[in-house]
Image 1 (cartoon, rainbow, N blue to C red):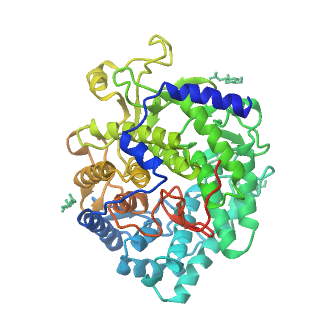
Image 2 (image 1 turned 135 degrees about the vertical axis):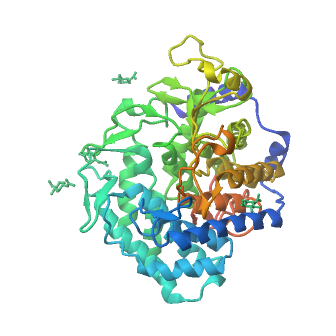
Image 3 (image 1 turned 120 degrees about the vertical axis):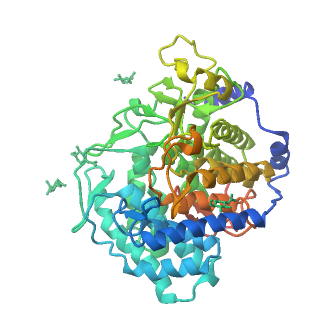
Amino acid sequence: MTWSSMLKIVVAGLAGLSLASPIAQVNLRRGGKVTYHPNAERADAVKEAFQRGWDGYYKYAFPHDSLRPVTNGYEDDRNGWGASAIDAFSTALVMGNKEVVKQILDYVPKINFDQTSTEVSLFETTIRYLGGLLSAYDLIKGPAKGLSKDQKLIDSILEQATRLADNLKVGFDTPSGIPDNTLFFGPPRTNNSTSNGIATIGTLVLEWTRLSDLTGNPEYAKLSQKAEEYLLNPQPALGEPWPGLIGTNVDIATGKFLDGYGGWVGGDDSFYEYLIKMYLYDPERFAHYKDRWILAVDSSIEHLASHPTTRPELTFLAMFNNQTLMFVSQHLACFDGGNFILGGLTLDEPRYVEFGLELTAACRATYAATETKIGPESFRWQDNRLDPSAPNNKPAPAAQAAFYDEAGFWIDSSAYVLRPEVIESYYYAYRATGDPKYQEWSWEAFVAINATTSVGSGFSSISDVNAPHGGSFTDFQESFLFAEVMKYAYLIQAEDEDWQVKADHTNKFVYNTECHPIAIPGGGERRAKKA
Ligand SMILES: *[C@@H]1O[C@H](CO)[C@@H](O)[C@H](O)[C@H]1NC(C)=O
Ligand SMILES: *[C@@H]1O[C@H](CO)[C@@H](O)[C@H](O)[C@H]1NC(C)=O
Ligand SMILES: *[C@@H]1O[C@H](CO)[C@@H](O)[C@H](O)[C@H]1NC(C)=O
Ligand SMILES: *[C@@H]1O[C@H](CO)[C@@H](O)[C@H](O)[C@H]1NC(C)=O
């Protein structure tokens, strides 16, 4: 399909959609002149929660990976290199928490990235450890300069990031250059896996490119960008059911797609996210990534946008298997609103911002409907346009029919594991519009998460968002509580700073998928070219 025929279809598709609030539209038309409303009291309350979780971790789990807050124990679920400490690093920096910054900075040179007793996920290690270290380095060399003057320790952040990547790079040593996501260390080697997925292949390029830009060694960028090429030019046709929307699993030997199954959900999500973030990072080097993002979001608006029968004003994105839709989504997928908004700001396309605001409002509906006021891990709905007797458009199960009537979705998986994506989208919505409504929504979510998941020495995942007190505690505090939930909940209430997302093409940082701000080369000066 040609570009211009695509556009016509997209415009025709958009005409039928209800668009966002007048406030947002007015702000966007004013050319990104957005007024923010910092709330010091709320920002301080988030800092307090961060400190409480950190103190529990530092006392009972550090330098292990994760706190078990109910039993005051720990788990080494991320190779035992102190995942929570590295994930907390950039948050402590943006919060100006000097004491925690010092605790982490003192620890960084002591990590032994050459050894671990368990398998290493290239993706998880990249987004949490590599992203966390590079972000801390960028912040402490930049706008958070005042928080440490110890040059030797600061240099060790980049040295340790490089050492880690030098161990991880064996992952790319495959016939196609598509990495094996499963590695072993001591010495570094791959699992000889036969396939990998688009999220785990396509969510390396920001961190690995940044490492090359900081060290002057182009190898890291080249490895990650070569792998990405297979996702930008998917083969065979099975791998691209609609322009820009691609399958999930890729054959590591040949680079060929193995299915046409996907969406904006876990396993696919941050592949799409990084397409536009790479363009924001460097519009010259990554123009092609931006073109692919535009195709993906235009196809999503045209083909995946779906409205529940009981609440047609809500907009979710469906999953697909070839061109058959599945009306299911996830907490993880709720980053999509924020990503559409960031892309709309970057490309001066208000319709992407407005669509992103719609997605954000629907994700809020998953929070508003439950007993705890926290949204579930996954949820389903019945599409209001497709035949209700179609095999892929089943009604709600009887036990949830009343809930579905009110809520517009029913719960598929009821857990909450301290995920950030809904607050993440509120953050982008707020930074794009300045509308205090999004600060309210974020505050409500933060208060609910704080009230329901606080236990023992920190915060715990819970079993059921729709049961009193969240059902039961699973006694586990994910490291991304520090990196993401605490950071987005804080930044949306905080003063404007260099690391905040900007609505007017002056971004100095772009956030990796773990919410670690990465410095944009020449950021704040260069205006991204129009699409
Ligand atoms: C992967 O294959 C290589 C070469 O055949 C072999 O030496 C290595 O042990 C294999 N790795 C694993 C984890 O099986
Ligand atoms: C390791 O490789 C084997 C053989 O290809 C594969 O069956 C297995 O799923 C891989 N393990 C992981 C964790 O990817
Ligand atoms: C998707 O398309 C491929 C190739 O046309 C086909 O082999 C496969 O069965 C299809 N899958 C479904 C679920 O329709
Ligand atoms: C968060 O929870 C703690 C512990 O229950 C409580 O002391 C604090 O007041 C709560 N903060 C907010 C803003 O609700």
